[in-house]
Amino acid sequence: MASLQGRKALVTGASGGLGAHFARVLARNGAIVAVAARRLEDCARVVAEIADQGGKGIAVALDVRSARSVEQALGEAEAEIGPLDILINNAGIAETAPWLSVSEEAFERILDTNLKGAYRVATGFARLAKARAEPASIVNIASILGLAVTGQVGPYAVSKAGLVQMTRSMALEWARYGIRVNALCPGYVETDINRDFFATEPGQAIIRRIPQRRLGQMADLDGALLLLAGAAGAYITGTTLAVDGGHLLAPL
Image (cartoon, rainbow, N blue to C red):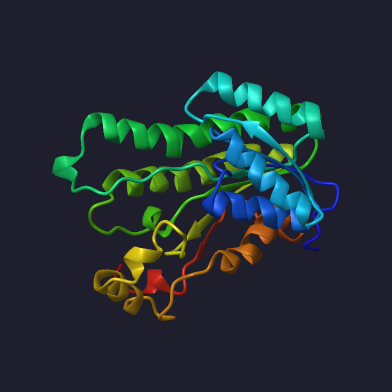
């Protein structure tokens, strides 16, 4: 039931990191994937990696902060690979600062990308799926910081908490159209960006607070992603699935 053969997926924020990983996972499991982000050259690199693994994909320019860009990206993806029925809403940014140092511009920038950007893509995608009256799945990539808090990342946590609640609200309204909407909430996952930090003593201290005593690896998210995106999760909607090594059970 993990097979996505014949499915057409769009992954936002897919030029690198988790988004690129999600695109590769979907392609390995049979989906044709539109790899979407602002950096088109990096998207093309991910598409080439997918092709090297025997999968199929296209690169699509997408800035989730622009309604026009979202509309164009959805139209281009459907024109090239066919009707989309999976959306992985992954695009996001984060900044580290205490609340009293957060400018209004920074706050707006984070919410515009992480929350409003997800809204723009999800609603555009859902309109297309509703018009076709065909089942579809949206997976919003939130975070355990949308379910609990820690210091220095206030706007990011607010944006992800909003995304979790938006997921529930969309799932309630769109279930009648056959559109499932769920949120995947990763814990701390090792990437090229954070690897050096987690090698430091403060980083190691965070790892010691995770009940499994390790960082997540990107592959740890694969099962949850495929469950929520594919046929195995056909009766799952409006749920929030944390993949965090038990981190929410302990102080963050």
